[in-house]
Length: 205
Ligand SMILES: O=C(O)c1ccccc1N[C@@H]1O[C@H](COP(=O)(O)O)[C@@H](O)[C@H]1O
Image (cartoon, rainbow, N blue to C red; front, side, top):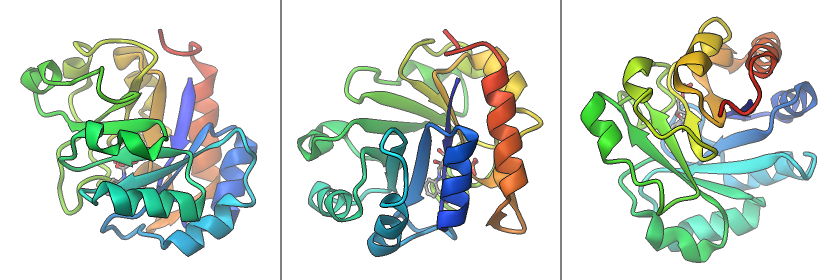
């Protein structure tokens, strides 16, 4: 199972997650309590192993702005967490992750698996477009295509991630709130989340 730790704001959390086995780290450039500047992200990214995905999370920013931040910060992947059409962002030349809000079975039927490299299943927006720490009904998501491009997010934490993996069988799990304590990344929770997610069946498909 691949693991993404999102909402990274410090080199300490990033290096700890990478050492614990995280496959991807997320940097939020959208309105959020976890928002980071391109310069801050660049300083952290420069310290990370090459193999780790450096994912920039954006909400409804124009492709030109996303491209310029990706270049400046050294992002390897782009996560679109708003109402973007992935086709408009293809020219950036980085793999695209498109987030879908899942409320019911109908939402599963409108997922387009072809126009982005990965689809990310998340709970509906609350205060922010994502990162709200709320899960959705994983039984609904069991109707999603199981495969190498499905990422599961939304309210995951060390205590529920195994159940979520068993039900949805994604390629990757993505967590932000669930590895925090009092609004800050908690190194012990990060380590525990990665350990549990990776202890189960490999790759989920
Ligand atoms: O993490 C954020 O603050 C954020 C802000 C705006 C859009 C997306 C954001 N994060 C993504 O939200 C989901 C779920 O996060 P959580 O575990 O429920 O807190 C995840 O894909 C993050 O990458």
